[in-house]
Length: 300
Image (cartoon, rainbow, N blue to C red; front, side, top):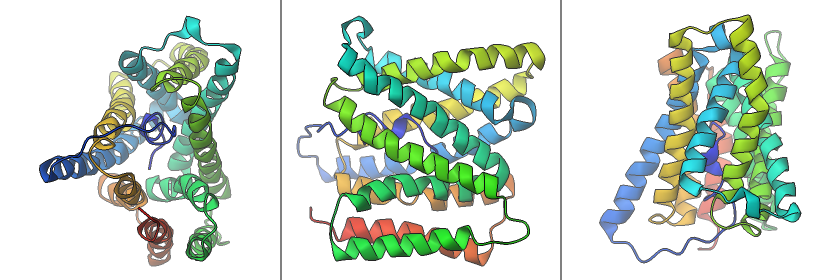
């Protein structure tokens, strides 16, 4: 899935969110919201790619950072003046990881397509999850996922190794993102740390936006695509995750999130005309299955 606030403050900070028992209708609502969130996330990434010819991946990421910062600041309202040096350290690291993750992912999307880029990026949280356990079944899941990666990265004349490398860089950033959010969650309440990191990242991209506007004035349509990408791939997933994590068990949430590479491939195929071969689909399926098996066999 496309990286963003949806995978930050609530899901990966390690902060427990007390949840009263929900009726069945509440859980069904949570599942419906998860479905809509996953779909809007990938549609947002696909929409952002429509602005690449004018803004380029870096311009789209800059706009997305601005949108993410506005949303997170409005929701979390971080008290920046109260932050200590020990709190600012991981926040600044998270800001760098946040920007690098989105830039590498969107550049990978531009080069190898939405489905493959999101699949490679998904290896980050999968690696974190598998590394946290010592079960034999998780070792088998890791081997299955590794086989899927090898198949995706197999040598061939048309292979874009730079694009694949950027997808793997996004995966490493997402893994770091999760770990940093856990550390921040122990030092700052709620989503204040994530909001502060998003704000710093947006400031870092501000000169980029100024240079792009000065050198190549964007069209209204391109800016619109980028803003829509920021809303659909940042604002909506973040707010949806805050809602669903209070209604759906964490295991079910993780299982559903593992389907994002498949949704990305379908959105890329239907919306952008990106075709995948049988081997690519099999590789995506293997990586998704590895995560699903690991979650389903874990203890509640």
